[in-house]
Amino acid sequence: MIKVKVKTDKNHSFTIPVPLAVLHASSSILSSEWIWRKVTRQINLHTKHNLNLDHPKFLKAHLKQMIKELRHHKGLVLVDIKLKDGTSVLIRL
Image (cartoon, rainbow, N blue to C red):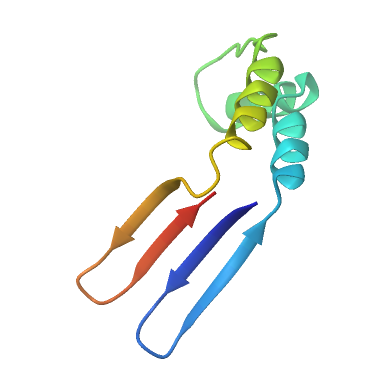
């Protein structure tokens, strides 16, 4: 489970739990060949360049392996940002 904690000031804070299953499902969707074709088409429609983004076949397997490995590192802090105005963001496994 990934926990995203956002604190805006002393009175406002919230936590968003993100299960690894959601992360796994979203990585499968984002690494699909269909999504890569749609992204390439939209880029070519909105720019003057004719790009050809090839779908990397290894992407899905590597993303699955990385998410599987994240399960072994519970408590690891991925992001810890504190701003001068008191806002802070903490992302932890």
